[in-house]
Image 1 (cartoon, rainbow, N blue to C red):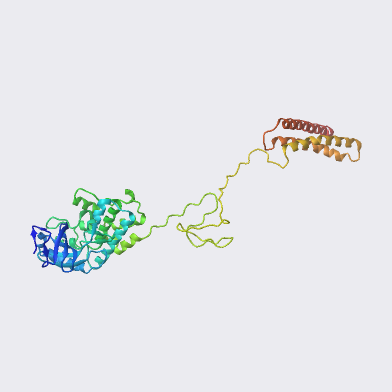
Image 2 (cartoon, helix red, strand yellow; image 1 turned 180 degrees about the horizontal axis):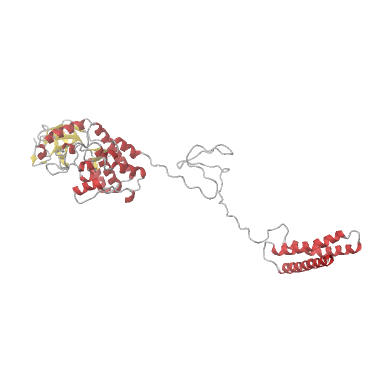
Length: 440
């Protein structure tokens, strides 16, 4: 017995000669209502989708509904809701797998946006299911978070295959009842234009919109009406993820931009190609710059480097660790900047006091040389040379004791150096004057 009140099916009503008993209503859309039901023959809980009564009165819709159900029944994939049975009395219905969980729309309503890894995983599962459906000649045409069911173990399953396709009647975006075919926010540009030759690339555009929403928490195009949203799908470029503060990386940015291309020929050719692009690893970061000073840095990746001393050194990446023994541990000391030469005399091996002592010791030596000149006429040239050299040496020792780099000069050193400089300087001056007189 089938209990119908208008378009509402109450709990306890049955279909197919009492085989399916309706327990509760799960949801409804523009084309059908979905109920939790019990299969009394196989003793299992199922989902029962029943076409709305006003659509079932048209011969075209029930026929297409049956063809889509038959095509869906041929799909066996973990990411597609399975179809178990179908019937026509009193209206067309489809018996499907019941997914215990919630939809992606419910998850986004609770969390707004998802982590990048989770969003990519869910999009990859949806694309896997679409790849199988497309191979069977089915185009979903209404991919959106509400039609992606999430099982308790995290498995994503695509639901409602073929409903939008079955409802296509006039070749425009409106049905004869004024309902849009598809959801404006997720419709491809070719759906907005009402083209008849919709192919699987339309579903890829919808997956791109859904992935954008999962990553950013918003839709790429927002407007006040469905027609305004459709116009943006046709004319406006979608914002980038980076412009909205989402750091998904260049690979995801490029994949999303291609999926949301206005021209179907610029999108991925099939679902597997888009799925592979989303799984492509991000490019390796550039190597760090070499320091201006210090030893050269070993490359982070590459084959082992042969050292000039000892065995080859193994290159290592960020995930590897190298442990050095006590004899191998080194400490890096940064290089010191070169010192300016300065204007002071270089530090010599003889101290300041020693220089003054040597300068004063030349005085008695000079006296000895003068006495030798008077007593030995034959060899007086020997002490004469010493008499000329000694004042110069004494003057140099006295001056260098003062200008030598070191601590502060004591009072005694200052006096001794001054006496030496004055005495030897005067003596050199007297010798020069005497030599000039002899020459004249």
